[in-house]
Amino acid sequence: MTTAATSMQPMTPQPYLVREVVKETPDTFTLTLQPEEGAGISPANNSPNGNLFAPGQFSMLWVFGVGELPISISGDPGRHDRLTYTVRSVGKATHALVSQKSGAAVGVRGPYGAGWPVEVARGRDLIVVAGGIGLAPLRPVIYHALSHRADYQRLVVLYGARSPRDLLYRKELAAWARQRDTQVLITVDYGGLNWRHRVGVVTTLLKYARLRPAQSVAMLCGPEIMMRYVARDLETHGLSRNQIYLSMERNMKCAVGFCGHCQYGPHFICKDGPVFTYEQIGPLLNQYEL
Ligand SMILES: Cc1cc2nc3c(=O)[nH]c(=O)nc-3n(C[C@H](O)[C@H](O)[C@H](O)COP(=O)(O)OP(=O)(O)OC[C@H]3O[C@@H](n4cnc5c(N)ncnc54)[C@H](O)[C@@H]3O)c2cc1C
Ligand code: FES
Image 1 (tube, rainbow, N blue to C red):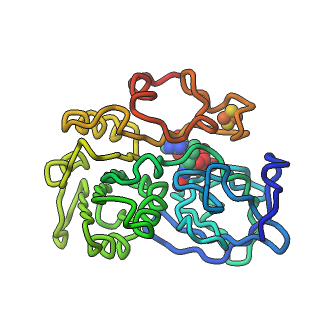
Image 2 (image 1 turned 30 degrees about the vertical axis):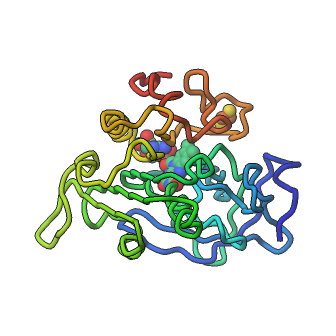
């Protein structure tokens, strides 16, 4: 099913077909794509086990007649027959993408970027902190950790959304919470009458988390302001800046380090990231016009 197309022609989209579109929240949808006959992607460069992508990598998705946009892969890295994306409709391209019908063709380039440090985290506790759609790029880490359970110690998932109806993957969150040595804590900004979990920003969950800072690796994804506060609080709890990883977003064009669109200080987000340590990226987080 796979070819060397990606490595030989990094700018050429491969044709994929939409197999399923699932509504997660009022504005967010999960799409499953499978390659058209004869097309496909190469295993990710940094994937030692032949997986199609590494957790945290992204694709460039081409919506014919509309444009191309970067979207993180949100599915199980152990699945070799499909690519899954969770997309929030915020503008023209994302709206066109989530409006695709089953059987429609979409162009796929990638996977691109440096993903989450699942190898560095081996043997340690994993702390996953997500805000809103930020849970999508982190879901492959959770899949990976649960399917390689013996390789990791405690798994702590902290997730914040605007309201209960904005929570992604609700059934999976409940299923993950039932796994051994796994803690899942959820909070929303605005609860409502039937809400039985916590209300408040995601940083408020840290005091309920079963943290063992010295043996942990933390992975953060969400709005930059949220990541800034979570990283700061994790540092206060005793994690070093090299134990904290963040995924960054910037406008992209080429996604392979040619055009400079995604430059962020000395880094190209597409090639050097999107995942960086807080040590690398922390000093830039307070600067808006980079
Ligand atoms: C590496 C990477 C991974 C990404 N992964 C995902 C993903 O998994 N799921 C997903 O839904 N989106 C993801 N995005 C963001 C997505 O690419 C943008 O939302 C999309 O390009 C917007 O295009 P548009 O034409 O729909 O909206 P536009 O018309 O370009 O923008 C509509 C509105 O959304 C705002 N906007 C645009 N891009 C962003 C952004 N990146 N963050 C916040 N606000 C934005 C604009 O300022 C504008 O107000 C990712 C971006 C990057 C760089
Ligand atoms: S998007 Fe072109 S250099 Fe990163």
